[in-house]
Amino acid sequence: MIRLMEVLLHGGTTVGGWRARDIHRAILTTFRIGEDRYGLNQLRYDLRKMKAHGLLQRDGRRYAYRLSDKGTKVALLFVLCIHSGNRTLPV
Image (tube, rainbow, N blue to C red):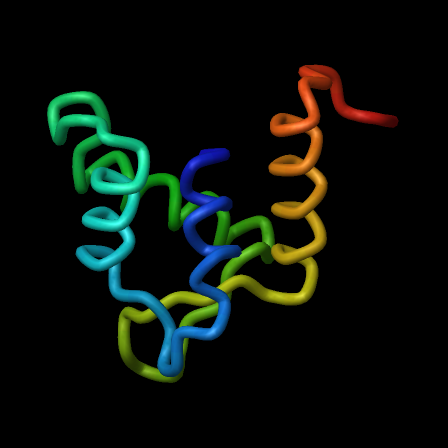
């Protein structure tokens, strides 16, 4: 989920949002992991969970996603805490 948030943060300027296949390809190439470790079905599950929590919004009728304002704040918090070496999140 952290990798997903990081990819969505870095691609925040993508016009029209991200399609699931584009996100999946970006995660696999950015983090050099195989599809057997993070499949497209797992990504779609993660996207649904993030959308249910209000972290993602769909771009109209298309299945293109982008971070909501809340999602951007949460993603920044998680990614910055992980990259700073602090594995525990502030309460």
